[in-house]
Image 1 (tube, rainbow, N blue to C red):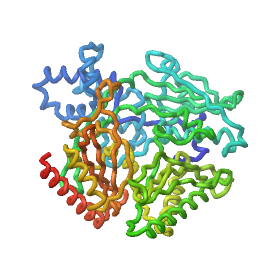
Image 2: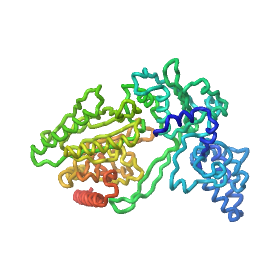
Image 3: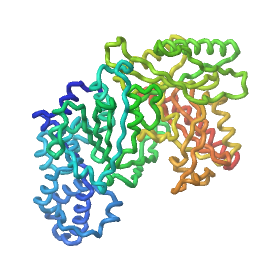
Image 4: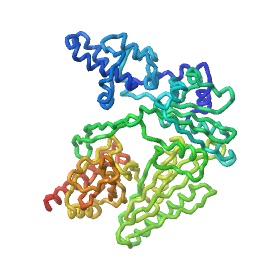
Length: 572
């Protein structure tokens, strides 16, 4: 994400070398009209050329690997007649399709050794590239014409302006530097720069000669044009959304993954969508431009790393008081991390075992950390988010999240936090961030184990044993999505009356974390008090450490055996 400023400037303005920069395509995806033609041809040829299949077997295999199309379009448009239908057994027809210029075909074309010529000879997926994925090129040489962009049947247009503060009130030295940072954020989200010479070829006037700061970026179905408006001292953003990218049906993929806990294959599923969900570009641009009110929020798809402080086990009040003192030292360290112009006091209420039950964190608190060592360096920053209170019987969560920073500086901050906690005598453990989110199936390589328990008394006994028998500690109440769970039949989760698809409402779920840092247990209860117990590994901490994995397996087996015995006892 940290590109050289000169590179962006070079890509955004006319240059004779830019013609080679944007040469790319996709080896898998194609436009919907091509797919419809190919799909119709395939259906027709299967009935008419069965006797010739052996002769043309190799070409058929080549076509099938090249063909990829959703059932949704097949069902809605299969009866439409075409003036020209692709014959996959005729080389001339295949060459004609491959020669067409579309965004999806050009997006990846540089990754082939001989460029377009290499791709044209070998249609279909590049299996080597799938095994060792290529990096998305920074530029693309395909851009719709101005007439297409203004066609309301093809694109919807949205625009907004970000009013800029005075440069002395920001951390940027010029508007060029600020605009480059906005471009970098879009490159991180898989946009590609459209060079000026490509835009000019499509009939749009170039403003480069007038020294207007402007960049055009494309994702195929989403196109953005960013320009600096000197008269209004603002950045104007025009967004084009392709109409064909609307109402795409999500695809669910079910597969088996090896479970390190069960030592067996477990069925898991993931839902995929062809196009990305809406992104809060307006808020991101305001935040980066220096808006003091805006902060990083969900929906910005920002990178983050999360940690948990596991409290000590206390046998008396003095040990509990010592833990509180150690935690106070951590708060003092947080205060020193804040900018000097802000209040250096971190207010976190500390609760002890004198209260009846562990107190949940009501909300999150956050502050900005300036990552520069000197003011002359490029402005980079991160946000440190933490629980609003600390309970000696509950974990304390800390998250580092960022938009404008290099990975090396974030790693330094994470290592420094780890060293400080070790110095203070606090146990800090790295955890996946989805462990506090609504779905524990967010990671496609995670293998959560779901155990349904259909008796409230049984659930109460199991949850109580987490802390008394199995050395778990309370990790807080996290909202959970029961719709992501397969085994909800027979459970009484409340249906959201506003949902057209009758989806279940999110429910608060109490979660526990094993003191070894290896295993989570979440209790998702329905309206009757029955629960689905979800057990999953903390891969961030375990990694490939066999000793930690053995600990996790041992705890899991003991918990699972306890659940089975409890269910048999009450016959649920």
